[in-house]
Image (tube, rainbow, N blue to C red; front, top):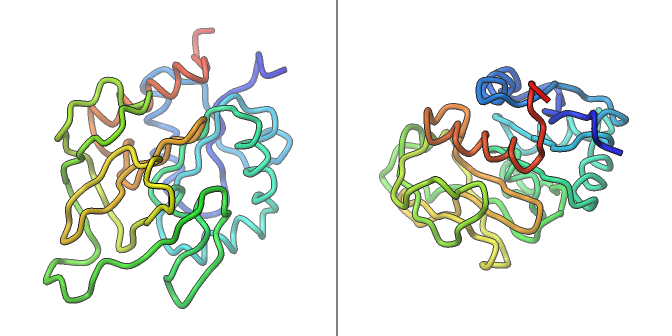
Length: 213
């Protein structure tokens, strides 16, 4: 059914879509950007990137009628990659600007970094990951590797078994998760040079979406 389909980067009117698409193409993936639910339904792999506020992201996903197609795609068992805000909205909800419901695919909440930590907020720049569970997309990533972050909020999953990596920034926070067909990361693989591209290439491997196929 999905033989001739591609990796689809979800277009919901905000986020770093172009840079994610460019990075996926750089490692040889067959990819397109779309907000069309029929194209999303046929995708072999789905990527939800994002920068900005949780509330705006959910409003835009609902405005584009994408919440249902995303949940349906994930339940199909095909590979799903969430990046930064695209990781956060998978969870039950966020405390940003009061409280906003998320997609509730995963149980947990999104909370701000402590205001009294003395650290600069947002957390921006390179930081290390500590591998807790060797997710397939982390196969080639050494423990202690540096990735690029830009965020003011972080996820607290209810199920600690889904935590793939953690990172320290005043608190130890979840920097990536893995559950079944879902891998999602708080860091930006498309901005993380060689190691970030390695994660995207492995996503191409699990979806089998190559430009030369």
